[in-house]
Image 1 (cartoon, helix red, strand yellow):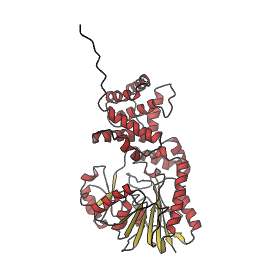
Image 2 (cartoon, helix red, strand yellow):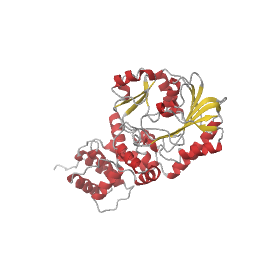
Image 3 (spheres, one colour):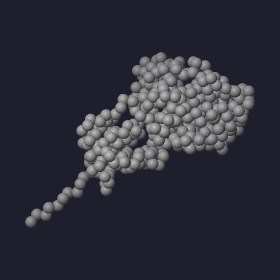
Image 4 (cartoon, helix red, strand yellow):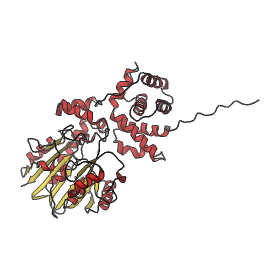
Length: 428
């Protein structure tokens, strides 16, 4: 008599990548971690690089359009699924794969259901099946998280909210800063891109290391808005400049290329290692120092200081949509306090007649305008020095107070720019 043995169920191909994506989303949405910071731990069990990329792509796409996936899920069930319910996150992942990443529906659901072992698989299968049969689609313009939309509407108005929603629809283009500004036209032609400012080229998204000029160190990746603070420092002509909170180093490279003798300070030794790699690749030089700007102090004053301060980073939401779910008001307030403390310390390290540039990649006025205004009130020896239009991309102009605020939709090019605040102060 032959014994009838049932073969154990096999995990579907690609399940490990989905498990890693689920860990990533849990780290962001429940634990409040940055996607980039959570990724190494979340994907470390994956052996193949393409599986790691898939996991981060799924998580990133869920975060990019999360309110829209939630609206679809809620339209297909009468059950009240909590925002942090595992079944909701698994459904978000399945929808992101089919509606944005091109995964066939059968592959998306076959790798989704095993994630709900012991959970409501039937519910997930029913919701996904209903949406698939009904031809669910995403809206042309994504929906911002409600709390973010309300905050930005209050601070900047409806047009900025609409521009931000449009900007998050797809990852932005690739911005490069050139080591040799005089070669802008030549590099724009070589790279098949366009320039928005001298020393800048904008390209379509591509493998960075495969582009012309990478091995030669002719450029580095840097959003056009992120390049403005160092541009406002001008030509160094061998004078001493301090780059505080310098890593990963784009602004340090800019200052070195502009002729400054740069000291780059950052408390993260691992991130300074990346700066050192880029200095070696580009042939530029700077002194890298491990130190916290709230504790470290220089031996002598500087001719210029650039403080790109720690912030909520809500301005980089196009590339890092996870910030929209991590930057809550208490975090914004805490960042503003740190910035004010750093700015006050940096003011004591400037030579008379020197420049102090303060910048944050935040769209929150509590971190930018409010900190700068308070600094001027408590430091009468400093005055705002508005930038020249030649230092700014088309569409960006100094505000009435002389500050620079880069908002969604402001830059003339449709590729947009990260959100930024920049203030340049001159020491009397």
